Amino acid sequence: MPPHLGHPFRGPDYLPGPRPTDSVTPVTAAGPPSPVAAPPAGVTDGRAVPPVGAPTAERGSGRRRAGFFVGTLALSIAAGGLAGAVTGDRGTASTAVDLPQAAAPPAAAQGSISAAAASVLPGVVSVRAGRATGSGFAIDQQGHVVTNAHVVEGATDVSLVLSNGRRVNADVVGSDPDNDLAVLQVSASDAEGLRALTLGRSAQLRVGDPVLAVGSPLGLEGTVTAGIVSAVNRQARFGNDGARQSAIQTDAAINPGNSGGPLVNSAGQVVGVNTAIATLGSSRSGNIGIGFAIPVDRMTTIVETMLD
Image 1 (cartoon, helix red, strand yellow):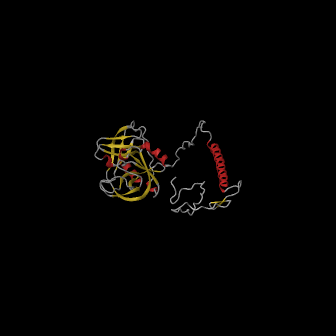
Image 2 (image 1 turned 60 degrees about the vertical axis):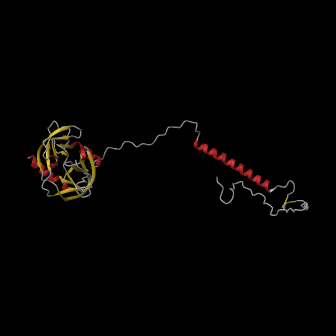
Image 3 (image 1 turned 180 degrees about the vertical axis):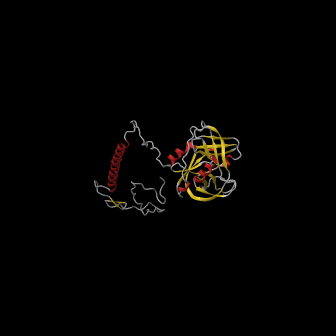
């Protein structure tokens, strides 16, 4: 430990030494020094000398130091014994430690997001139409699939990738470019394992209702994103004629490739067809939290006309 600035470091056993004499006997140049009278008995250098056998201050200090060291030693032994009692013998083998771990979570409750996603995913497909990609969903057991018209526009070769990974061919049986809807169909054998989704009622939607967008954004098949209904009856432009149409606005993440996929409520019912997103410009075409879906009530009317 470095010394304290100003005076030497003084430890716990510091004892002041004798004070140096204030005067020095001068030595004259000529002759021997004058004799100095001997001090009287019992006096040495101005300090009283105790009688023989009487305890001196140094002796008392020594006894105090000895008592201090004995007390310190006793405290050290007691502390060592306590530490040994707490830590135990390091030489013995350590016991196994069992960390608590939770049991498997219960099955998804009806009405939860995970339950809704599980019920919808088997009916959602990825649509490949030439160089274009999008999404779609089955609406019946006859192999009919709904998607956006702009996904299959001008394509002569259309195929679907099912949720189990199988790729099947599909035909375009109807298209309405102005409303941006199209109906595809796959053969009965190819439709095996394709689950028809339940259609809900978009008129019953309220702002703040939870919804899921399901599809293949950027080619990532079977993607589920969650959000809420941000607005109902929002006027948006889509379709070939660019006319304003009533749409459902949602903040569920929708990106290129989600076109034609279902927007579903917490019960797993289709309430809209994901169609468009708002962007900040041609160089920023990703999701910014504003997406639009065609209400399922209007979709149902248009699709029934195509199938008649």
